[in-house]
Length: 108
Image 1 (cartoon, rainbow, N blue to C red):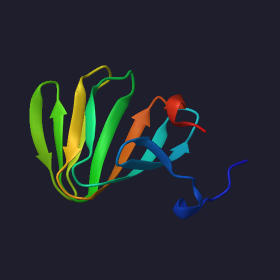
Image 2: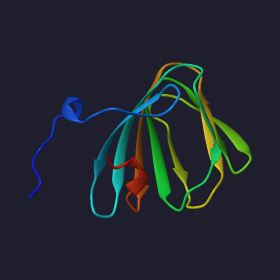
Image 3: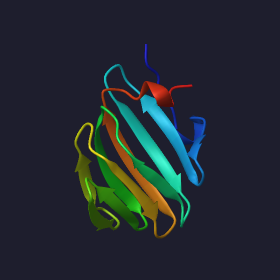
Image 4: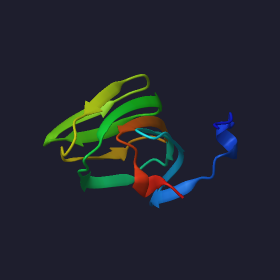
């Protein structure tokens, strides 16, 4: 049985330098709440998950399949499965990502 969990009670995982995430997992999806320090980079990578990114605060430069996008507060971006992407925080950022299927590599 699921129980409500305040976000601040979910442990923080430091996945890459400057990237701190809290993860909520369902059977088929993962919701990630990121705090990313200005200047931190996510190297170009790809994964089998569909990803939807929402910029809650800050400015993030995203590379998606060789194209660059500058994402600002309240911008969204859909990243199809197996598509190369990466990015860099131009300011301190708070980002929410949804992943489907669930990101088992982000489970504790």
